[in-house]
Image (tube, rainbow, N blue to C red; front, side, top):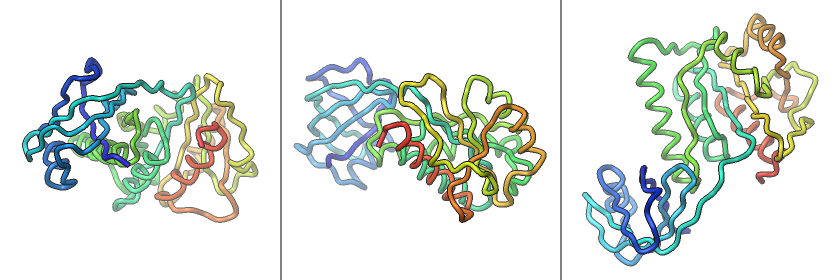
Length: 245
């Protein structure tokens, strides 16, 4: 499979034009991936535009790709959003990376009451930027035409407000409804909001607020998954329900 690269703002490019990779993207292509002149690659803008092309020049500072084909991929009718509680170490980052590879459309950092990690002030900006970088690289690796969004961190109150106009599914190992029993039609216009708690789980007070907002509690099975694996596993199940897989 051809290597895939991202170039923001290239939506106006036509067949026969040249797209240039510069900066870190060029260095990654020429030094790390060792692309060579004549090699077939794909390029996207991260917003649905997809190009096929051939490398016409390659250096660590600039890689030029001559476009040979262009197409566009529509955004999903039903958006699949992962609300990932902040977790210690790199567990939340692992969840975000895998969820992006598996098809999530948006990632929302959630400052849950039991989150050990706290994003405050400059740390919130740094944390979001870090997640955005992880998402971008995962989208490239997975050859996704749409790069998922990484939203601003939310509190529980802000998250509850987002439940209006969306279908909120809260992972809870004590729930009676299995996630595999949830039906989600690809043609539905209602977005899915999947909520995953931190290492200590979602507090009873938070669960009550989600219940009051009309959320549905669901479980993946009879075992309890870590916060780093629960979200990606659930995304996989929902991808099947939505007919994406």
